[in-house]
Length: 84
Image (tube, rainbow, N blue to C red; front, top):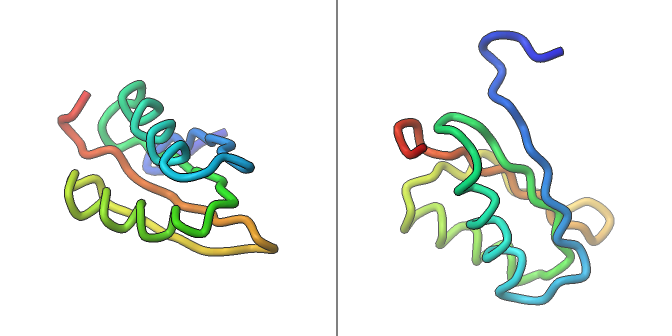
C-alpha cells in the first residue's frame, strides 16, 4: 500500500528494444500518468541512458534516477505536476 506522500510508480518493460523505442514507449506511458506520478523504465539499450537524460532536460520531467543492474538500465522519471 502506498503512503500519501509516495508517488504512484508505474513500470514499463522496454528490455530488448533498440533506440528510440524505449524512449518513445516511455513518452506514451507518461501521457497516461497524472502529474507527480513516476514511471520506471527497464531497458537493455545502452543509448537509453543518454536518451533519458536529454529527454528530461528538454521536457522538464525530472529524471529521478538512472542506474544499471546486470545489463538492465533502470530509469525513473516523474511526470511534471500540472501536466495531466
